[in-house]
Image 1 (cartoon, rainbow, N blue to C red):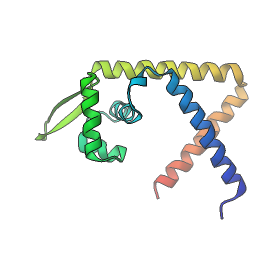
Image 2 (cartoon, rainbow, N blue to C red):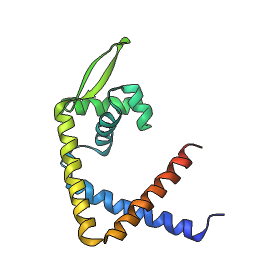
Image 3 (tube, rainbow, N blue to C red):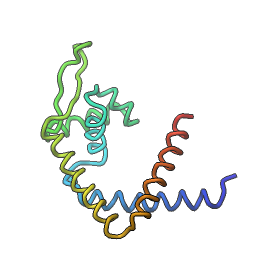
Image 4 (cartoon, rainbow, N blue to C red):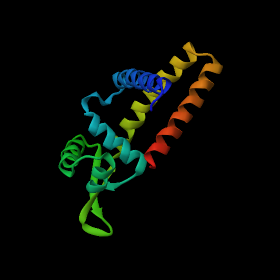
Length: 147
């Protein structure tokens, strides 16, 4: 049975994360990209070059959807494709310098806003509590994902 505190914590995390996500999205330059396109760019930045099928699996979307996303990103000069060295029939996708620059600029703007907000509206003790709470949440999510 799920406790009242677990239900309340889940609700508050969802609401607060939703507000933070919306505010950070407002600050991003990538407003002309769909959330899926932004997610693929971020994954390529984090995990490095990948094939379309690897991206589809990682993003948990259909290969046809990835193909459309990659076409749009390629047209915006944010990604490039090159032959897979181990299998010339496949293409490996990676970020262009423009794609990397765009992601880094967006991240910097969002992180600076969030850091300033936390600096102005939270005490040092509160910021340390946030850090610990997020570590606990991350641990719980990782444990649930590993099952």
